[in-house]
Image 1 (cartoon, one colour):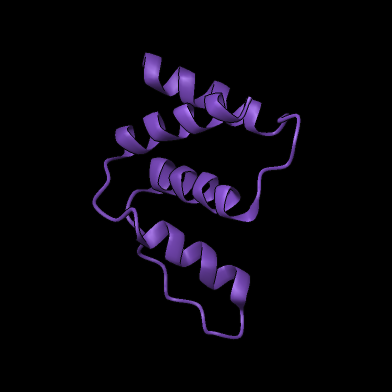
Image 2: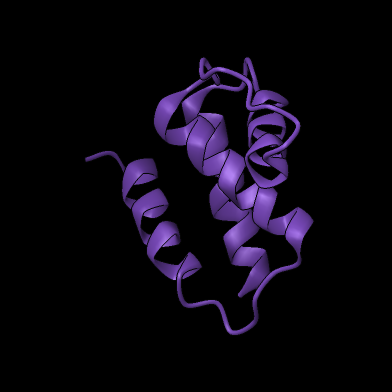
Length: 84
């Protein structure tokens, strides 16, 4: 496993033990960076307007389209480190 992958895995574990719950925009950023880092560009069908939470998650992930998985991992690590 590369150093980046190891650091990312550690950051994912640390994200579950943050001392305070992040605000909703930060949670969306964490979610979208995680999805981009682990799955790449969003290829899922766009949720309907009725499912507000799913739509917000989809939109946040879609905004990262074109970001490499390694860059998303680096940004995720930086964000989690900043929240600790």
